[in-house]
Length: 87
Ligand SMILES: [Zn+2]
Image 1: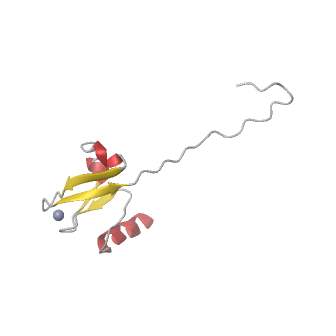
Image 2: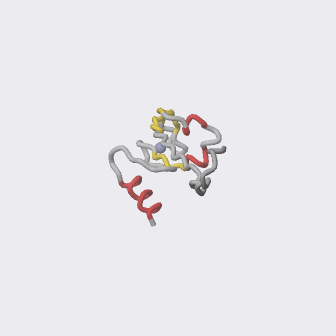
């Protein structure tokens, strides 16, 4: 569903293209999964630009990584019922 749409948008987009897991060579349109190469290129998971070589045509291009974090805190505990605040 939405994954396919995101992928199609990436392939069809003539300008800069965003995808949570796939990068696209600007020269030949070859797409590669970051999760398949992230272990070899850990910089890809850090904020900033990483230089990549296309796995198909060898063209060098820069991919920008935009990191965002979501922190989930545990649910509230039931009220202590008049006791002092514990930990
Ligand atoms: Zn290429």
